[in-house]
Length: 413
Image (cartoon, rainbow, N blue to C red):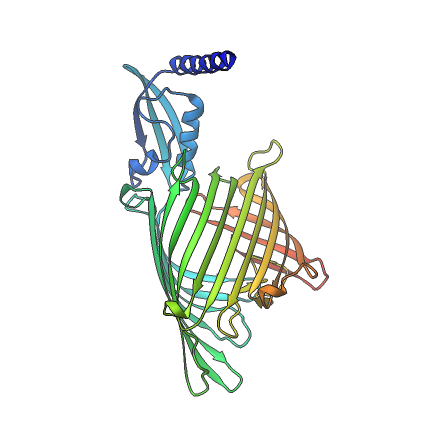
């Protein structure tokens, strides 16, 4: 017992000695943040005024600010002042307000056009607003060109609290070719969410627990229209974990999420359903070359009950099983796995990527198995534009390992 007490006393003494070896942080200042408010960056830091200027902790704080994804670069300098040092973080802000005409053509034949407003870092608080109006042809059998409207707003750390609030509304109308003839199908959605993040470091990292409600309505009209599904009001529960770091031209770390939602007639819905979704991702450096990374990702989902004819999940197209046609297989249970190797090609913002994918979709959750696996392998050029928040594009070629075909692909990552 005496030895343990002695060891603990020695450890405390060494820590105290180490703290005394560093000057005290007297002030923390920011430069270049014409939009971003200081408190947005301060909450991502693990040092504060009065702490020792430990280089390791200061670097964690610089990285925490960079992990927000709001800046092209984050630099740091220390200035000696009376009583200690002044930390100055200089940031280079990205473009946050982007009203744009929207046009998107996928290599699998899907296309859309319209207009969007994307406003990141709203009023410098790291809130985000997104509005989209478009027409889209998803190349789904029996379904014509859709007209879509979506608007969403997210407020992390609302009112200076550890709570995030978000909401979205959506409307879609489309012609459908039924067994008897054509009719119109309309969808309306409303989602409200609240969550709390628990972190012992940067505020945006760690565990997040969230809840909320999703409301959806389906209506049909026309001479040949079948009966509508009706309305569903579903409580939602989600748990997420994030230890993910932005290195401007690449990312490293891991994150995962699990969510469940369900609607029941007893709670006022016109039908019952339960949906489970889970995802995991791990990004890590390989070799000595900067921004040379491997990405491992896995997704799965299960949808129980629900209206007849609803197919919740699909694979194929320019973002999942790229060598297959868009939504070539659909159902109410799926899994999707992918592994990527990315390496810079002369410029840091341009990387060559090798992509391996595997997955399947099943009509019902009870049909899920691994007897048949669709898989593909491909290569791509991936471009990251650092002037904008979360903007990366790719173009490439993918080949299905069962020999069923190959195709070019491209689009946003």
